[in-house]
Length: 243
Image (cartoon, rainbow, N blue to C red; front, side, top):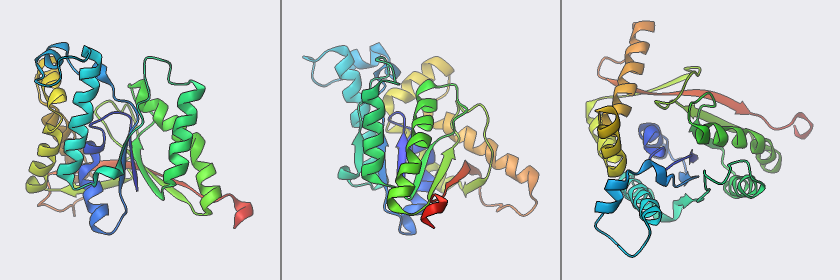
């Protein structure tokens, strides 16, 4: 199971589903495609109490790396299962170098299942990761001679997606997820300053709205739940000639 996050903090948006899958025996790996230093406010990076000899840009990259590493450790993921590809958004995502790096990484992991953003999204890196994955995935099914299942997760920047799978959870699990999201302290601060709400509450509010949507559709939904992570499912089958 590969969690393919365009940025640090994206894996935590699907943390409950990841915990459930790992509980049932899935071999879990995280990848952060871009470090996205632009997501860290200048003031936060200047006040960051670490190495002052490095540039502001390098500080922001290190902040995001440490935050994602901390969140993954809190989740229970071994450090060697977390990869930072370091793809630069500013240099043009569709460069041959970036496409090759993504292709080689996906083929080296060769996942059976992948969690990644839905393709209809206002964030260009989310869209790029989705598109590159879909270009590469058929090579993986051919080499493995096994299908690959994609779970496209909802993000606050998602414009539209199917709601095929709802993963429900209650308040206790919601508090656990909040703690993971708050490990991204730079994002917590940026969201408070720019949106008037923390990163943790922004994601949990979205999860609560999706649970309410499901309650409106079905009368038999678990009443002890309060939140739902939502996914669109796509199956990439083995090419017919290999059957």
